[in-house]
Image 1 (cartoon, rainbow, N blue to C red):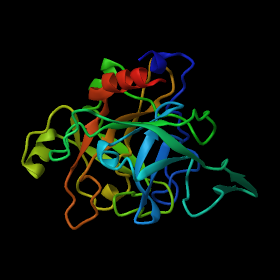
Image 2: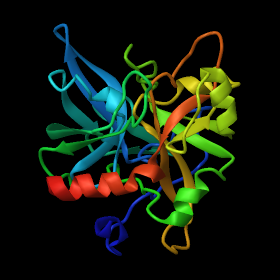
Image 3: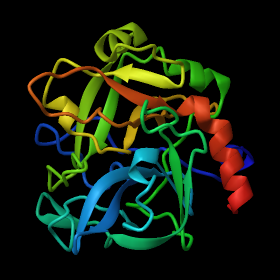
Image 4: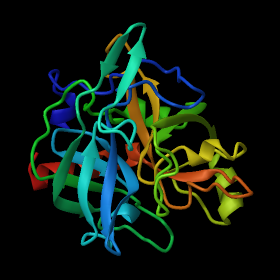
Length: 277
């Protein structure tokens, strides 16, 4: 926990909550977003997302890692538009460009030891990068709900953001980084939809708007701005992880189950400490 409470550790800085072009986020405004690259059937594809939480660690879903260690080989940081070598935006007469993306290998695959793929429980994993990535304008960590106050806030936020390229096991549905608003639902709504009890370790979010459920990445962050460790300006905090079965773009939009990150902060910090920060 000491890493995240270190006064020199800066996280969750975001440029604007507003989104340009309907859903597209502003360049470098969500610098923690990462893409997970897999090699399958002779083809290299992005099939999941994640969020940077430190210079060496990416937080994602267990279902993106479990049984896929031979396929998952690389993390991309600092991406905005997948198809272009350089990400730029026009600002008046000037063209502003982000630094190039960083592709980095994986040293350790750390899946929660109690991950249950059948019932989609404890759907959380850490990926340790094979080298430290220095923070820069377009590559920075998101904050975690490391205090009791932030942990409790997860059930009090009315609207969350999902950000991503719509990356699922079928590939990316968007070339550019998107963001959508998704409403918090009572756990009973998910109990009804999935016909099972929903524990505190999961959040029930979304439903209603078919399009909004398609914007996030499998394994990507469910986030919201919040007051963080007494700082004046709010920081973006990852309260949830997009879990299996959430990113559906079908005929019916059910609320989705997200891993409740606050319930796993101890696991995250213990796992990082025992595997080298």
